[in-house]
Length: 103
Image 1: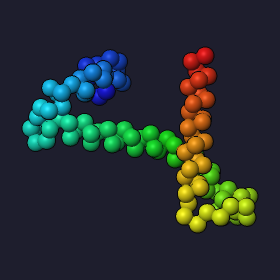
Image 2 (image 1 turned 45 degrees about the horizontal axis):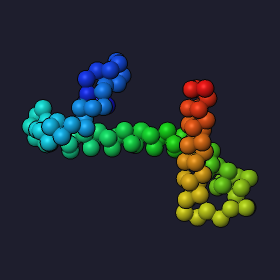
Image 3 (image 1 turned 90 degrees about the vertical axis):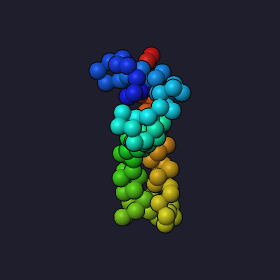
Image 4 (image 1 turned 135 degrees about the vertical axis):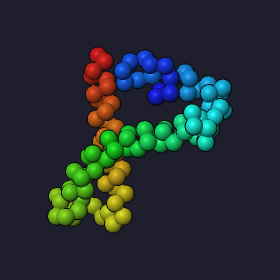
């Protein structure tokens, strides 16, 4: 949405980034196609969403490792449980706020 016409001070319209004419054309500097630049920027947007989900990671990690109250009940040598648990909690939390802000 950062490539479209301004919809608000923070967002642009998404339509232009989905246009074949825009995506297949050269970028402003002419070095890379716009599609590559859009994908590159999208990767940063996805990382931002991941950072939001990971904000709960230290809470989960401290309960499972380092004398946490779940350390004796869970065997998690690779850290997968912490990541899966915190991403689910972040998803449920986000869903809760979205539902309650629109009702």
